[in-house]
Image 1: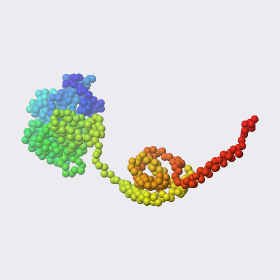
Image 2: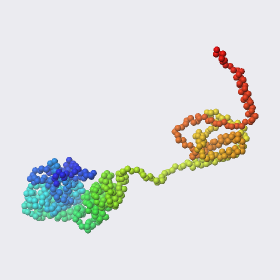
Image 3: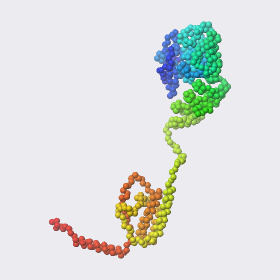
Length: 621
C-alpha cells in the first residue's frame, strides 16, 4: 500500500472536487477495463500535514489503512491507494457525502441508514475493539445503492490506545458537537466502557438528522429521539446503553428494517431460517413504498446468495425479475418498469459479467420478461457480448438457452447485429398471392371470335355453293384497276394496314388456313384450268376480308411489333401493285385484233419513210 506500483491502470480522475475537507478532497473517477466503465471515488490529500499526530502518517493515509483493515458491509469498501507527485490517493467504491443527499430522504430511509451505521459501530466495538471517536454527518457516505457507509476513520484507535492524551491531541480535528464534555473524566476513571465516546456521538447524530423530520412515517420516532437525548447522552456512563441494546430498540423493529438487516446478514442464517424468510418475502415487500424498496433493497435482493437459493427462485424471483407495466393493475411484480430501469437494470448488467452457470441460466430464463427494460445500446454493448461467450461453452443446456435468448434479441437489434457476417436472401416467399383480380375481357373476346368464325364459315359455304354457277359468267371483263396512289373515298381497300401485314406473314401459319382452298382444289379437278384461275382469284378477293377479320380477333396469330416506337407515318402512301386479273377472249376477236395491230404498224412505218424530215449531211456543209 502506498507505493507507485499500486496505481490503477486506466483510471481517469475528475479534476472537479465533489467535497473539500481539511485534509483531502473528494473526486469522481472511472476505470476503462475491457470496454467496461467502472465508476469509483478517489480521495486526494497532501503527503505532509502539520501536527504531532501526523508525523508518521497523514490523516488520509491513516483513514485508508483503517478502511482496508476493518471491512464490513456498512463500512466504505477499500479498492486501492498510492502516492504520486507529492500527493496521496485513496480509491474506494463510488460514494457521495450524506450531507448532500439527506434532504431528499424520508424517515424510513433514514432509519434504515442509521441502523446500518449502528451495525458498523457495533462491529468495531464488539468485534474489533476499536473506537471511531468522530461519529458525525461528515463521516457517513451514501453508496450508489442508497446504503449508508461509515468512513472518516482517521481518528480511529484501539482500546489500548484510547487515552486522555490521545483525545486531547485529536480534539481540534473532531466534530465539536459530538465530543462529550466529560470524556476526559471518563477515560481518567479507567472506566470499562470504552464505547462511551461513540455512543454519545451517535446520540448527537440522531438528534441533528431528525431535527427537521416529522413522525408521519414512523410513529416511534418521538420516543426514539427522547431515548437518544436522555439515555445516550446520560452523564452517568454506566447508564448509557450499548450498541447492541440500541439495535434492539422498537424504533428499529420495523418490518422493512428487519428485512434489510436479514438480507445483510444472510450468510449467517441457517437453511430453515432462509426457507421461512423467502416464502412470503414478496408479499411483505409489496406493502412498502416501491421507490424505497428499489433504492434500499434492490442490490441485496440480487445478491448471489439470494439468486442461488431454491426457495427464492420459486417464490421471489418471478416477481422480482418481471417489471410491471403501467396497464397491469393486478400484477404481482414488485417493481414498475420505471423503477426497474433505474435500480434493477444496472445490477443485472453487472451480474451478466459473472461466469457462473447457475447464475447465467437464471438470467436467461427470465430474460424475455425484462429485456425490454434495457436500452438498445445496453443490449448491444453490454449484454450481447456476454451472450456470445455463452454459445462457446461446453455446457449444452447453457448453449441452448443462449441461442434462444439470441433469437429474442433479433427483433430488437436486427439479425445483422446478432448474427453478423455476410448474409443473403436464400429463401423466397412461396405463399399464394390473394390479389383482387380485375374482370377479364378474354371471354367476351373469345365469344366474339367464335361468332365471327361461324359467320365466316357460313360465308365460305355460300361462296362455294355459288361458285359453280358463276363459272360460266367470267366472260365479262373485271372492273378496271384504280391508278397507283389513288386515295379516294371509293377505294375498296378499307382494311386496316396492320391486317394486311399479318396476311402477308404466311410463314407463321402451320395449318390449313381456310376451307375455301380445299373447295377450290375440288373445282380444279372438274373445270378447265383457265376458267379455274379466274374463279380462284375472284373467290380470294371475297374471302380476304373474312380472313382478315379472323386474324384481327385471333390473339395467337397476331404479329408482335418489337419496334412499336418506330411508327411508319408513310405507310398509307405506299403504292399497291397487284397482278392483272386474267380473263378469256374469243379466238375470232383475237385474230381480228392481231390483224388490226399489224396494219397499224405497217402504216406507221410507211408514214415515217414518207414524211421523214431532218438534216442531211450536206446541211452541215
